[in-house]
Length: 244
Image (tube, rainbow, N blue to C red; front, side, top):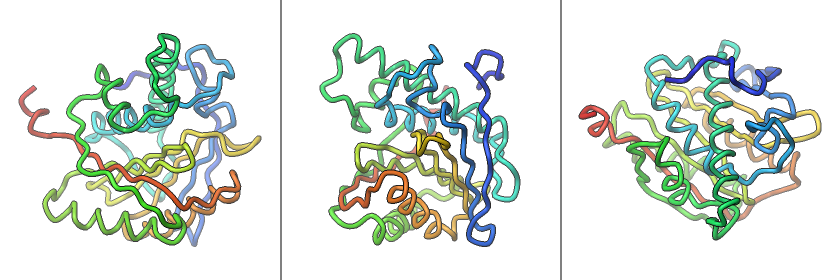
């Protein structure tokens, strides 16, 4: 179970924006609540742990899914912030340990590598498929996510889906929560001098709005308009969970 907040380096300040006629809720955290700053040492350290953070985030959301408060109309819950915080802490710790021991072939991990290196935390996570796209993200992300989401629900009714998007050496997590019919995007990177990590929520039928907003964030914050990206689709094996 996710612990309380007492042993966190700090509980982050945040601001909430409601965009596109309140169809999209974005929570922006303070700059030091981002993967480059938020660690057990509570020190600016730089970080390439985003893929690990996404994997651990998925695992923590899965563990807490029965009591996970995800709502478009309400402010982000302290429990969800706690999950985000601990995922950053653990992802940064694992990545720093691997780097110190000289075990990293590349500073940026692939999804299979991140699953393997986080196996003490992550259980029963399966990569359903992985797709590489050589096309503009702004024009194609929604189409590609929707296509595979529709394919997923044909055979996996009432199962959550987790999608890691990797582009421009950054990984973010899309969490398709079946019970609430919401999608939440977690991005652990710092976005400006004033803005750290963020979490954005939409109803599933507003996925196009979320994709457009994220593409604009990449352009505005990083001057990046990707034409190459990867989507890794993941789920948790419920059969294994039931036998534990």
